[in-house]
Image (tube, rainbow, N blue to C red; front, top):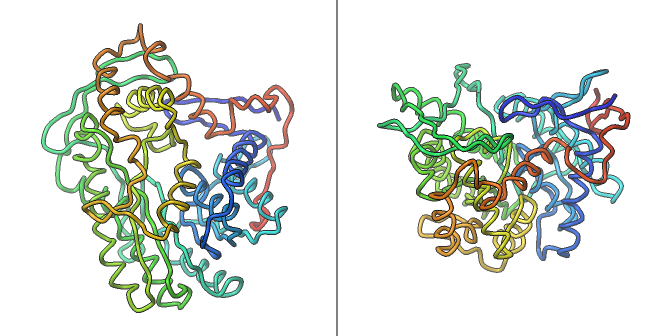
Length: 398
C-alpha cells in the first residue's frame, strides 16, 4: 500500500515501515561511528523499548557494546491495508539489523505493567541469557492497570494549585497562541498520575527480576526523567507529571537498598527536552523545544535521542566515575540547561509570534523530528511508492 502521514493533533495515525527502518539505521550508524563503549553492558533488558529513549538505549547497548537485548513494549502489528504502529516497525527494523550483525535480540509485546509480561520476560531471560546486567526502564503510557489491585489509573497533565496560561504553538501550522490549563480538581489526579508514571512499576520489575535470580552481580538499572526550564515548571515539574517524576526519583534509594547484596546500582537520568510522542502532547513544550533547537544547533551542541543515550552510556553509566547532581541524579540535560542557552531561549520566548516564528525558531526541525518518529520526512524514502505494510518483528509471531 502507499502510506502517507495522517495527523490528528499531536498524533500521527500512520507509520511507514521503510521510513522507520531508515530511522533505526541512522541511529545505529551514529552509535557505530562513536566506537565501542568500554566496559559496556552485555545482557540488557529494556522495558519500553520501541520508541524514543528506550529504543535509543537498546540501539546503544547492542551496537555500542555488542549486547544481547530483550525489549518489552506494547505495540500494534500491521494488518492488511492498515499499517502497524511506529514502535512495531522500529522493533522489527532493530531486530533485523541486530540479527544481521550476529547479535541476540528478542522482544515481548504486551502490557509491561502486568505480572504476566513480567513473568514472560523472566522466563525468556532464564532460557536464553541466564541473567541481565542492565535494566533500562523507559515506559511512557497514559494508563496503567495496577497488577495487584486491578484498578485502572489514567494520568493527567495539569498544574497544581492554580490555572496556567502561557504561549504555545500548533507545530503543524506555526500559529502561536495563548493556552490556559485548569488546575487539578482533586488530589486523586495526582494519585492517578503518580500510579501511572511514578516509580512503583520500576520497583515491581526490579523486585520480580531479583527474586527470580536473573539480575547479575553488579547490575545497573536506569530510568528517565526531565526537569526543564522555569517557564515549563507550572505545567511540568510543579504539576502532576512533576509529582510522578519526584516519585520516580525517590525510588532510587529503595532500589539501591534492594540491590545492595548483589552490588547493584540504580539511577535516574535527567535527559534533554526532545521531540517524542509524549512531549508533543504537552502544551508549551513544542514552542520551547523549537526555540531550544535553534539555540543549541547554532552553538553546535544539539543532540537527538540517540546522541543523548550514547553519551549517557559512554560518559556516565559506564565511565570510571558516574557524576551525580546534589539529588543523586545523572544529568545529560547539562548542555540544555547551560545558563547561556537558557538566557537566549528566554529572550526568544518573549519575542515569539506567529509572524516571526520561522525566523527565530527551528520549527521546521521540530516538524521533521516529529514526522521522523513515524517514519516520514526521510529523503531516502519514496513515499509515493507502494510498500509492504505487513512487516513482522522476527522474534514475535504475528
